Image (cartoon, rainbow over all chains, first blue to last red; front, side, top):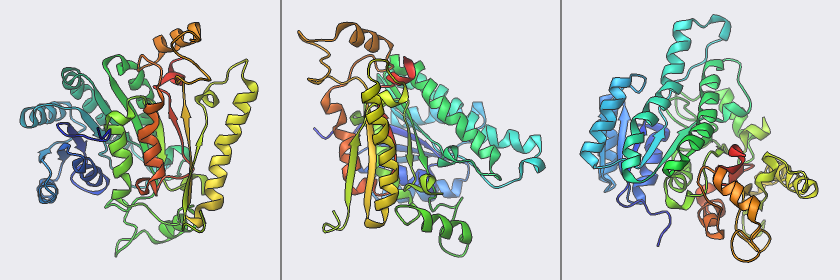
Length: 255
Length: 125
């Protein structure tokens, strides 16, 4: 038996309509997993679903603002209805841009925390009954290696992601009895729309510095996360829970 | 590994480095050294396409730590199993998946990472 096999399993991936989320979806689909790609932008969702279907994967798209409880509950209900069950949740959706903390308004802060942190609680809570029905589950929180170093203009993002790390540990303890394993993956610099590492929008000095310092001497690509995502979604990780796994090419050690 | 064009080093440490244990100061010190060797080796040999990571098992049934059978270390095993989020001790085959990941190209962007694989035990004791 292939212990990475995900045939018959269903995964929700928030922010699955692009970037890292779509990379994760492709990895899971290679192991036979059906995926629900969740995002706000319907055009991006449609494109991502088409891309998945072209690869022969079973994929649906669900539009949702993950910071809104009603919307999250509807998204989970719709996924369970269309795909039959929910086994795996990737809390991957996030927004981020730099603002000096002394210039940030409370409204801005609340928005970051709602989308980057509260959303993870809402999605986990909404998926919990479905995972119980399925006899267990896997929750993977996509955090950030920023929680190992800090960054002056991303205090809000670091706080949200730090909350996520510790939510991971405590959720693992809360729901271990239900055969739900909860882990976090902390990417470093990865080429996505949020952080373009090449092309016209490349964030030049930062990318060049990180690549030069990094032990692997490159930035990440979404497909770098296929392997770890499959591991943490499959039976192969049934003895791994509450773990916070840095996957940054060694960057945070080297800067 | 240089001849091979790169390599993978996986240090099998111990989740003891997350908690400590009074009668295993020597073992904890050695394993703590391993964690930090992992990070610095990752930096030293990244240029050679060698990725270095550590896996930290918790309680796993082995000859060193029998979790069942006549040599079972009773109170420790029962206590940990009860406290652990996964409600069990590990078996050697629990480490197949993670070992394959860290040995394969699928982990080419993972280096210097210290990965606890203990069923959540160190969080819960």
